[in-house]
Length: 300
View 1 (tube, rainbow, N blue to C red):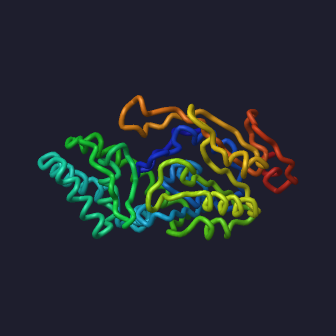
View 2: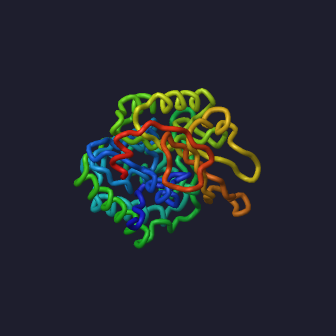
View 3: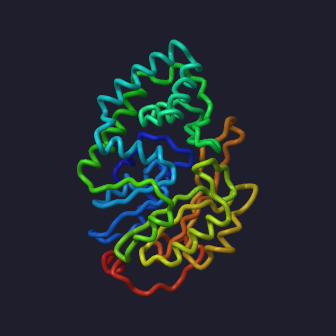
């Protein structure tokens, strides 16, 4: 694979390190549609680089941000000027300016403010309260927006902008069920929902009813899919792998998330990829018999 492209928005649980494993199992018809019902950062679809894609998310701010890039409301030049200005104020005023921007964003929903908060909040978390307000605290680094850091973010926006100039990608704010329902047998669905039994928030809530609803949607789709979820950590195992998903193929890979305030709280997790076709990897937890499809012919 080429070097992994990193999106401009930081998200907890981003799949950067396992993008190669995910994409090594993707088989999609040339005229098919790449579908992501849980966009988040968009890192997997961004690196899949398929000509036609539909990204959706229940969080309107994520979708608004990427539509702002698509519609040229956010450009590398505008982003640099904004981050340089706000970064300088942050350096002068410190933590109070972060909360000024957070209050401003919760009132107006400006996508550039969302970018600022994503890159200066604690641990790169995206979390909203019951009123839909962004409520992640400051990262305690007033010098956050150094020249090099701003250039890094601007380059990430520029790369995403370049992809949008070349490919037909759409970004929609809607529930996953509406997104999955449009899939045909030529399409490919990648799902990265909130992990059941893990930390959630207002836009990122997830319970057993959601997990079962997703199971029904993916069980009935004609498209191929890969679902990312958690398999286990050193404390417990994801019980839904046995109670819901056991009829599908499951492969696993250990992954480390930097999500704790202290290093001692930052533990590795076993990731699971669930799919309704035979994966290309050798380590398979369970296999199912699938009827030959056009994808088997495409994959050779």
